[in-house]
Length: 331
Ligand code: UT7
Image 1 (cartoon, rainbow, N blue to C red):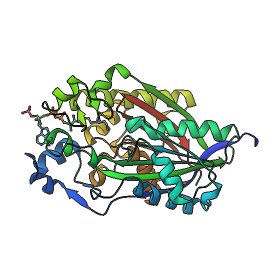
Image 2 (cartoon, rainbow, N blue to C red):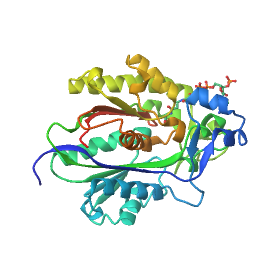
Image 3 (cartoon, protein in one colour):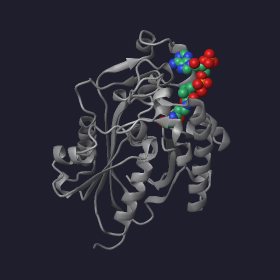
Image 4 (cartoon, rainbow, N blue to C red):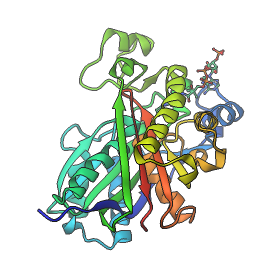
């Protein structure tokens, strides 16, 4: 066991399929319009995997970029956590598929499903392992192929989601930097509001899917919307209190990207301007657990954040689950 240390971000990377599906493309598939989607969600386009390409391929490329950014070799990684609600297989896990393809021969590997909150849950695990000195390098890959579980005939959901992966390598960083605090929570009694049946499907699930036994994503959008706005405020306030900071100490919030109206609603409740809340929703739609690591990668490459900045990361979604973290940028 090494001596205890702070846990921070050493490298970042993202990867998307080449195929772009625009709102205008969707107009030809379901009864919708570019105007409705843009106004009600903020989404203009999303990336979609070819049917014969497994989603973990995106995770492999994102992971390689994060390791190259950190200048860490794959063999040095101690643990790979893939956060996903759309694994290619239940077994082998996506993390094992990625471990093998990047050559992280010494890494332990497991998948973590906390839906769209997965990256924050993963961070809280990485933080414990690295702070305690048990592991040096933990790679978290948010990797999702939602196009494979979306019902392309359901206009309520198919306009919202996309595919993508974001990877972050966590490791020891200097005193005063890195993860300051994390907070995770769940309300299982509300889980029925977003479902993707897998090995089992109930009569209620079949009814929600118009009487069809299909293992597709179903969501009560307006219930989740109300939950999301409230929980973003609650979780952000909780981590600020835990860290003894105020919103004035925060440079940027990097939230899960589900709907621009959720981000604006939360900004209003938190009494902050919209531009303090990062958004790339228009380009990718909702990519579940990949959206926070992709958001971090984009904000970093756009030079919006620099060393010493405090960020709030906040996620919410299926389960229902939520999570938030404060990190002092160390790169
Ligand atoms: O990442 C996991 C967490 N997920 C979320 O946070 C998603 C949260 N929910 C949402 O983002 C929003 O609730 C939606 C975007 C899903 C829906 O927006 P909304 O403003 O809540 O619309 P609504 O469900 O109340 O529907 C309003 C109307 C309905 O028509 P009627 O019943 O008023 O005639 C819908 O049928 O909009 C209709 N509608 C559409 N119209 C055109 C629903 N989807 C579409 C569509 N195109 N794609």
